[in-house]
Image (cartoon, rainbow, N blue to C red):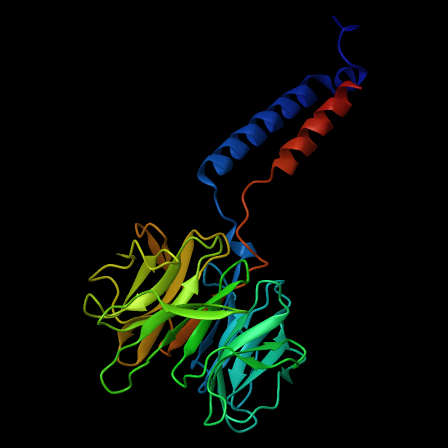
Length: 335
């Protein structure tokens, strides 16, 4: 019998063999469990947001479980509306540190802050293109209002729309379309959500509802658009197809009310949002896209707004590479 066993196994002894078998069983069991439930590793995901917890509005970042909150900007100006670059290396945000509200870009650790462009008027709602080469934003001025796009080096600025009430642009994952909200009729109208081709225009209303529909966010796979609406009373998060069909409410009463700022997780399984706790408090929550489970991320007396997931630090599941590595290790024992 001894001559049949591989040399590596014979040298291990009985206790070594038992240890190997135990490690095999543990690896297989853990892999089966994690793969079956697609369990996320929260420590690898990050969410940026802005908050008034230090007196004025600052940009913060936290882990996706709400831990390890730290201030990235730490500036006396009002810094708001963070947006991660697709590679997770930079964050665009708005600030009035040079007077009126402008768009700035900083490294993900808060260093190397630089202004994106020198443009008259107020700039807001920065949104990176999926390839990381351009930023869409809303611009309010008498001369050039509307949704604009600019290269990240501050060149090639162009207007996509010309309405001063167009705001909150969000790119489709393929980079071909931008959804945004707008108030076309300031006297008798309401906010609606529109979609346009980035290169050809072709603006179309996809909500067309008498209640305010606002703040669209395209899902990572492009199959859904999340948005906020008051069509059922207080503001809630809804989901719809990109053509405006199959609208259904995600957040339910009485758990949440007056909801703002929906934001998809990079894997498309969850949506972060802001819920009004009372007149002076706003907290960040995360809910599954089926609406069945949620968790609270922040718990601070100050107001927290505009969660934005780091798209490059997505949830991860148990890696098949680990199984392959373990199998290779076992094969070496028999060589």
